[in-house]
Image 1: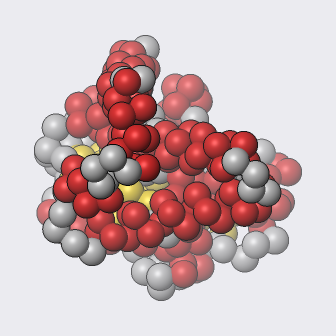
Image 2: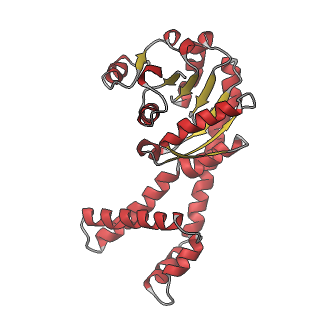
Image 3: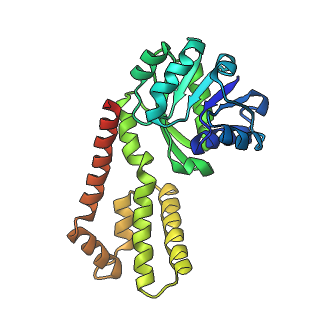
Length: 267
């Protein structure tokens, strides 16, 4: 199976390197289309497949085409590549907000998968939600999921609207985690720890808590109760968070992200 990744940016390279590292494809079957001559030259030195600058040279050769470009670049991209498209090719888009219907109408194709990965995919710890048009066969869907899973874990969602919700939760989610971590690091430094000590205290605490959650059947609320003791330090912190409506603020932030994802999809 020949794979073409359109766009040699961070996510495009994450996919290319993950696919090759997992041996799910080979350099001989990997193609990358990059419009920037400087970027194309840089990619050529990485020995990760064949680098192309013109779509007519690579689009017809591909069995699977992955769009890893900015959503605002999609109208121009679609116009350029449409003459070279084969309707039997499978197309995967990770462009935020660009609907399956839009891609189908612009390219005249039916086999479309829309996915929303997140930043930890760069280290093989990503979370991707994906969905597909009805024309995609089960075999093709499994093939694409196997590719996606080289970057972490994935879930298939029946409704395309769930991709917007995934954008708000897992897509934007790492920023929420970093925000909370940063706040805890600032608190640690205010208490006298150095920057490196604060980073270690907080990052290891997050990692340990997440691993503990994943390896047991307790809910987050149950774990909170296990850590809290009546009249203790954790209870004091939780009361302060509750008084500041922190949980409600986090939920509101995620809902704001969802509304923005819906707006982008309607542009």
